[in-house]
Amino acid sequence: MTHLNTRCLILACGNTLRGDDGVGLSLAEWAEQRFSCQSDLRVIALPQWTPELAEDVACAHSVLFVDCSFASPPGAINLTPVEPADGERKQGTHHLDAAQLLALSRSLYNSLPRNAQQLTIGAGSTTLGEKFSPAVTASFPEACRLIEETVLLWLRALK
Image 1 (cartoon, rainbow, N blue to C red):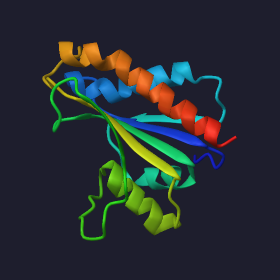
Image 2: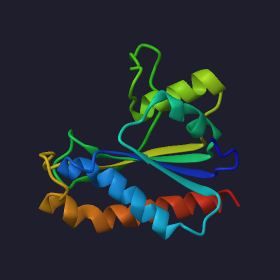
Image 3: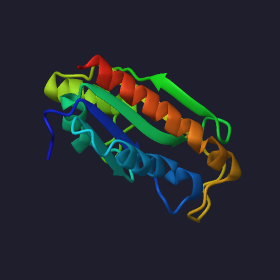
C-alpha cells in the first residue's frame, strides 16, 4: 500500500545471504530503528527493486536509494544524485535500478521526488554467507552517518 504522505522514502535492496550484497538491507534496518518516531519517513527493504515500487517513488518528496556497488572499491561509500534514466535505456520487467525507477515513476504517474540520491557501499565479497567483508564492516558507521544527515536535511527542508 502506498503512503501518500511519505515525505522521505528510503528504498534499500540486497541479499543477506550473499555477504556484502546484504549491506543495503542492514542499513535499512538501522534506519528503521533510528527514525522509528518519524511518521513522515518510510523504509522499504527488498531483495530487488521492481516496477511496483514506481508508485511509492512517485508519491515521495525525497527518495534515498541504498545498495551495494560492484563498480566501487570494497568499502567505498558514494552518495550521489540520481536522475531518471533516458528513454533509450532499456528497462527490465523484473528488477530496476534507481534511475529506471525514477523514469518509470515519471512515465506512469507524471511525478518525481524533489530529491533523489543513491548511497552505495563498494562490495568486497558476495560469496555465500551472512557476514560483511572487513572493508564493508569498517564503512558501515560512516554510511549510517550519511543516511542520518541526508534524511534529517530533507525532513527539515519540508517543514
